[in-house]
Every structure is written in C-alpha cells, then in structure tokens.
Amino acid sequence: MNKIIKDVNEPHEWRWLIQTVSVLFLMVAMVVSHNLIAAEEDDIAVVIAQELQLDQAQTDQLSAAMDKFGAQLETLMEEQEGEDADPEKMINGIKQAQDEHNKEVEKIMGKDKFKQYEAMKEKAIKGIFADLIAIQLMDVQPKTSLTDDQVDKMADLLGDTKYRLIKVAWENAGKSLRPRQKVSLARELKGIQKDARTGLEEILTEEQLQAWDKHKEEMQKK
Image (cartoon, rainbow, N blue to C red; front, top):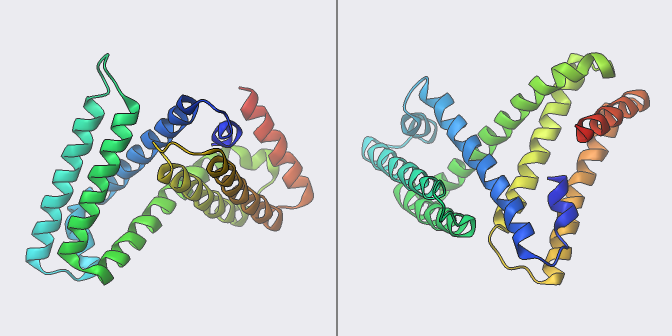
C-alpha cells in the first residue's frame, strides 16, 4: 500500500492499474475467507438473515443472489489465467457485478436493512484484518515489549487502517485519474496513514515506537 502512495503521481496509468489489481486480489481473498469462516457454522445467507431478521423468502433470494455473485467472480478470475488476461477488464467486470449484486440485495432486504448489511460486512472485514495482524504482532511482541492489551489495540487500529486504504484504492481502481485527482487521492491515502501513526503514538511508548519503526524498516528490506 505504501507503494500505491509512492506511485500515485506517476504519469503512466499502467503503474496505477498494477497496484489496484494487487488490491483487488487481496479484497477477493478476504471476502472468500469471510464466507468460509461463516460457512463453517452455517450457510452465510442464513447467518445474515438471522442477524437482519429476514423472512424465509428473503433468505432464499439472498442465498441465490450470493451464489450468482460468487459464480460471476469465479468466472472473471478464471478469465485472467490465460494469455489474453486483461486486468482492467477484470476490475471493471467485478465492479459491474458488485454494483448489480448490491442493487439486487438492497431490493431483497430494503434500504434500511441493506445499510445494516453493509455495516456487518465492514465489521467482518475489519475483524479479519485485525485477527491477521494480531497473529503477525505475536512475532514482533518480544522485540518491542508489547503487552497483550497493546497488541489488541494495535491490531484493531492497523486492521481499520488497512481496510480504509484498500477501500479508497478499490473505489479508484480502473479509473483514469487526472493529475489533480491523483494528488487528492495521494493526500487521502497519506491522511489515513497519518491517522494510523497518531494512533500508534497513543498506544506505544517512545521506546516501543522506535522498536516498531526499526522492525518495519527491516521488513521492508526483505
């Protein structure tokens, strides 16, 4: 994500496209992971229906809509395996499929419950990121003398940060940005990182922050 910020002012659109494709793969992997986690207990549509108090007809319609969307994603991903792969076409295809899916889901459950559904997805995504980061922080913990409470707070902060960065990048994926738009986007991304830094300074001591910065530099060199 740092490289996206670094390259966002480059004049060549393909650089931006390559970065957004990497973001896309991360988002797809994340969504699949969430679905699999939920599916271990029950069908994902049933879980959502219970949370939003949908009736049986709505549940069946939601399940069908999710299966349809999943099949569309698989088809779009499979098209990228051949020699004629076109990342930009895939991004546009997924965005179109996503828009159509959201409209269908909103029609099924209504505007108010759709807003709740979107909030559920956001919470789940941030939770997955936080869990993954918490696991990574366990390896860093001895080097930085982090307490378990600090690890939990950092995981939530960095999980939220990753979600915000990816959301902004995804919203701009596949777009032909004008110079001013690129500058505005770079500022927005850097603003998110600044918020994360401020949050870290509130969680860590000065010594821990220095150890954290040293660890990040070492990781970037690998």
